[in-house]
Length: 401
Image (cartoon, rainbow, N blue to C red; front, side, top):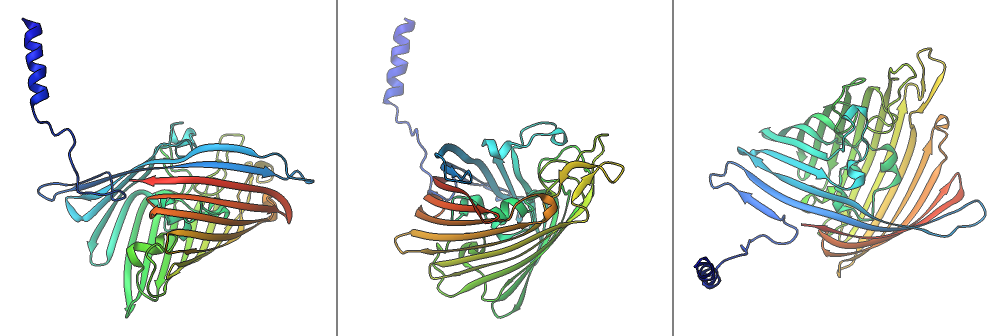
């Protein structure tokens, strides 16, 4: 009897029309989920993405280049949520990183745990052109760092960025924009933050970090926020330019690069502190498929060499100081293929024991759905102190729902 009932139930289910797949009106690249509450009290957009890379490197041993070393990695794998809460004037962003490089860096100051959280920030448009941000997010530093890793023209950011950027931190930011007449726009960004980077839970060690940035857009805004997107995917019909200047002061910094690097811990367990200052000057230009980005960075410290309590004996930790220049340009053809080139030069202070570095990079990209679905490759030639150091070829793809 039970068997007959089961057969009847299965038959009824099979004959019942079932809409097993709901059709959404969103499209690829616009977010996997876009939801707005019926009473418009909140919204959420969910957009996962990941990047896969193949890397081949040839190192120079002083006489010749050796056999290549190959590496395949998931460079980034991230889950991003954003929208508004209570009012469209109160926006939020949460971004989680899942790849090894995203969550690495466990230490005693973050309870030796993976660092999953990239962004967790509220953005309140409290009056006119004023916004107050609170939480963990990118500081208003060099333009290349603030550009999302999903919107890059080459496989990854430059050596200038990896050595001198100020990255993310936990604190507050005040942002404002001013019209200077006609299309001329000025944006002002100010930040006070913890000073030790993201996901720090045991602190604050040292002092706070203060950041100020001014941006000038003499020809008006870029299409679709293109001043913070590499490549001229929108093919600007008139020239667009952004020029920016950032000043960052990390008071009593306790890490070798302010937000990153080793904590400068003495033999007795206390932490060495020194003021660090970083400045940036950068520009983004786009017109009719051509794009150019230029950056200059300089970091100084009151005392680069960390010492024990006696003020004489070195601990072995050294603040990475010096300056760098990065120049990058590309042209997007109408078939959505792009060629790009980059030159980066680093000049470190002598006490750091780091050698002057030059890197030359050529790249090619195919944008299938803009930056949301693309295939990229580049090849870089690097010298140290004027001598051959390495050649590196990279190939990869990005997919961003």
